[in-house]
Length: 107
Length: 120
Image 1: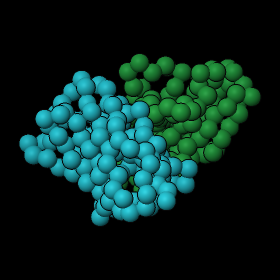
Image 2 (image 1 turned 180 degrees about the horizontal axis):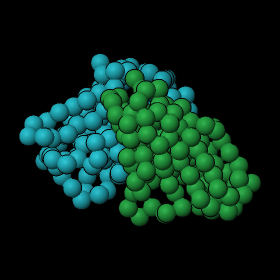
Image 3 (image 1 turned 90 degrees about the horizontal axis):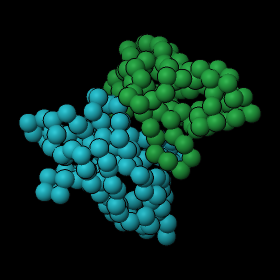
């Protein structure tokens, strides 16, 4: 199985700050990586697919980059509605696997 | 696309978990979709369990961790798909989600989630 790791596990930032989350795969997954947002008590929501493509209807404050084993998710200007946990997920191989998540709070 | 989950939330050890995911806005036999089950627990995080999809015939894929106990079945007459997990134990306690994949592994649509608790 491909193991996904994320850092940090949690962060606290101020409104307007730039926030960056990293995700690392245990082997090369090309660009087969998604990012999801999960607000408390809700189902996950797909934000970015193919490592850098924004899902329809998702704010352009969110962006993704990377390929191979190292990936980055960025919130350009943190807003109160961005309070959530963010997960990466690979789809290069079965089983499809998720990272452990990064919890984002407002300072 | 909307996915509506149903099924019991409390089971005893060794019982069988049965959940259903009703689809609106597409058909279960769509040739562009795959229909997945995913669960989430504090100890295991988000865990993909398996999927069913139709590409001239029906296919299923399962995670090794549940393959011997799990069945995912499409129901074309009701436009839904189901999960059956046999011989549950406390480690199966989790929130279970159904999800639609239109992009080879990208979960674009999710059900509302069902909290399943296994307790004697």
